Image (cartoon, rainbow, N blue to C red):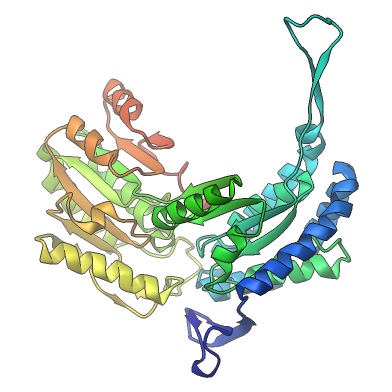
Length: 431
């Protein structure tokens, strides 16, 4: 949870634990001038970092890995406290980050080696073309409060390995984990090529200062960042959310589909762009599916049997957004069959029926434990609705193999599964 003290507005961030409200720490906000100063320092130190070569940089990343493993409990504790995740879920995220680090540091030399290819159609047959990797001096990473550890490491590690310096702008809701990582990097005595900035002005200022920007977050903010980067003619990479969908076809195993979709929509309180946010069900099985889905959602509990704590959402402000979407749907004619209420950092697992495609709960990213279910006439209507707006993931539920393959081939989602959601939820369910 984030607050800005009234006596220091626009100067300090106070981070509180979503689970119990205790203050976890305070951090100074970075003004645009301070962001520029941080980037300028990184630009100077990057020259030496690049000159070390990939082997030298990999040695420092290996030392960083050892520091992470030696301070696992501290890092995981910080992650769990500021996100509100169960400790077991925070440990899983930590291990995913370590896996990503190991993957890149052990393959960096292979990825970055220069290649020579013989050119064709030139007067001098001995002429060769060399292809080499040239790092951007300073890479900016703007990360969200969804997986603030793993998602950041996914971008930080390959950038450092390639020879870039990196500055991270974490979400103002979850900045403490990144602060811990930057402190750990400094404690190693590593070259000062990793830093972070915080505050509402820091994101735009970062885009205006770095040489490459990676952004994870909403499509709306992504468009703003893309335009800002384009104005400077710097490359950017956008990892955007959307509305992941499930398509349920007639003849399906209703029990299996309902259980899988409940997991796919409610795991981690739905706080992932991979979670199911829309369910399209063919009319002949709609009512039976709804009844079974409600039973599954009512029974949905903690993913970890030994963890009996109530799973909270990271951002209280976002809980209000989820609540507003549900209330808007109800005003427009949707019916709540389960949940539908929330306050503070908790929103009850929810099933909405009689949902109309014009409702915001079907067009705007939710990132919450809400499953809106739409009755469709056939698979063609489901495909059209699932593709608008874009969703990063989709699942098709059917016992008809050819029909499932046909629907999968028509969906535009990057990842599509049949009768399964595990491929979408790996970061949450990975052991």
